[in-house]
Figure (tube, rainbow, N blue to C red):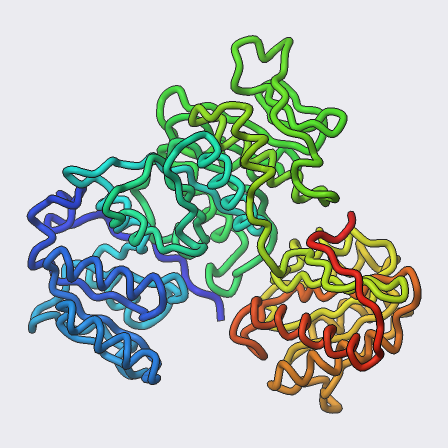
Length: 522
């Protein structure tokens, strides 16, 4: 079922004047917070601190949520409703209709409570919208926001941005859809000079007043269509990151839709469009020349000169093309806010590359085992598959309404075997049959209809054994699912950990020597 298009309502008289932490109107504001995850808990805790009257709603009555509910009641939240029934209607707050709903990213617009709030004319905000309105507070520094979104590469890029800003001597933090909730960042006692804010399409849908200093859509591919209702609505949500940007809207020269979103955006007077590319940069681009990331955007004589920012080797011994693209985007975003060229190089050398993104787990008997559990959609898996020439591909999971025809067609020539994860592999099976009919396909612990076991760890262990049975010297066993993990695992990280553990057990059983590194080769 596709979510309907729902445009957030404008502010009401009760919420219109709420623009800083110190506004008196927060006290007594009646707010419903949907979801008791990381962002929902942070929103409820913040609003209670402000003196708002808060009711939290979550459909799961679990021990974890009950513990969170107890904590929130202690800090002053009026009530926490934990049941599926509670999500079906808009609750009252202190016996009256609420003034505002703050919703968690996982709640679709067609969820009954949100539909009821919309029909009642209530403003619905994301935690990001709330954080923006609270960013100014007497006695604390007010941070600039550098904001980015995209189908893939967000976390890598926002981590790079944070590292570059810190290398420039700024107090900076990556937050939002990664790590620290943005509300926790704006509540920091000291405050920050700059926040690097990763934004999901879900958060952007309910956000309408942030003013980034610089902003970027890294790329766009079919994803989360089930949540947004169509690719057009998904792209429109992503494009909201450019609205009201003051210095630079950064777009991907290799993705024409990102440029189109900049052209459609209503930005501040004087804001510039700046492209990034892994090829030679054009005028007002950041790109790559002879392995050096260069800036032709943020210098006076950009028509005839360029500034060297960093070397490709600063990104690690081997850096795939998409990692270089992320670095160029991070460089453009930070140069827009005045970061020095030296800080770009230092930041890219020092950033935390993290786990589960083209992570070389082991090399043994001339077979590489690579974990890319973070490839949760076809676009991300495309970048992984493109990095290797002969692949035993472990793929599948929760597809989120996407199709796999383009992905399989593009990489059929490099696939030697395919091993399917997921409780429903029908769409991936169909694409493989249509575009790679000669490639053997295996489905561990699946029934005759292709439905896989929900026991993710058991399935992963069997998938690794099958991969070992079919891999030949020179192959790469690549776990790049092109799908979400929630049908068999709690997260992509748990899925990646299961792969790593299964490979380690395999190596121990065989008594093989293992040579592993941090990065897989391109």
